[in-house]
Length: 416
Image (cartoon, rainbow, N blue to C red; front, side):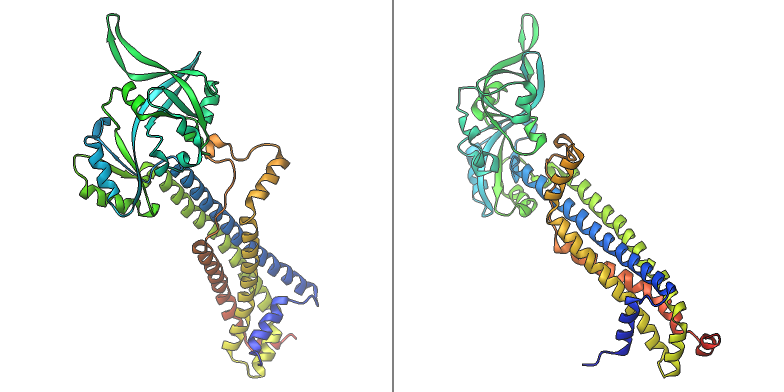
């Protein structure tokens, strides 16, 4: 099948032969434009893939410790009618696990070292139903009622300087009245196990007790809430609303999206801003095609004049140079797509090599919550990137191509 001559001529101009110094310079400028588009597209794909991976990784690690939905009593009091609440939440078709818990704050001390801690009282038999941490790590199974054992996060234990079998002192906020005045209540706990969730915030602050021991220490009549796991974590807000309308008693309900709403909102905002900023980089590279096409039109004025005298219409001339610019944008976008996906799918390996080369850690866990750089390329991000790059390249060709179609053959051939 014979291709339209506009397409063949546009492809020929895209290659920009080096028959003269001027043609060679135009070829160089065209190559720089394509390289700029490729780097911009690759940067967009890599950055958004890493941000997706970061968000997914942190979310999964959070949900390894947090429940999808929490039902709790107001004022940090024991939840009334615990058995009734458990039966009602388990009756919901989306709920696949439920376990009671106690949430409180405390101060852990060992020698002269003290650290604030989030105290969580759990039922070791039911907790694996609601969190991956309890299901995957057997340390929580060591908790026995009345033994006053504690399972510490690995970072918290390291900060305190304790290990398995050591005794730590828990100081609870509410004091007790004595003849000498109000004194803080303290209890020695035995370190029964350590856990590593992979999330620095939890590993450095969280301590697990059996819920019966926690109730005695904090003078509660029972668990302060119930943690739930549902089939689809993305349906947590809807399930929370449905439970709020059906549960008996005065109870509060929150889902995992509300627990860390500020963090997730910040990540989404950063992702949008990075998309806009890097799209501007692609736009700058795409509009470099304007200068390339203007120089090409100036260099090819005689060719344009000859084509016009042979019967080519202004529309055909315009189409020829639009093909040239569009092909440059297409090639640059394709190269950027390949480069971006290549880096995005191997970013962990490249990151490890870069850290070895530089000799320091690029992702301190106490700041970034994770120790490796995850990547999650998504078609929902990649397709718009490719389409925007192609659209910008196409828009950049319109004015120079229109100018080419307005070349007067007589004026162009006067000095040839």
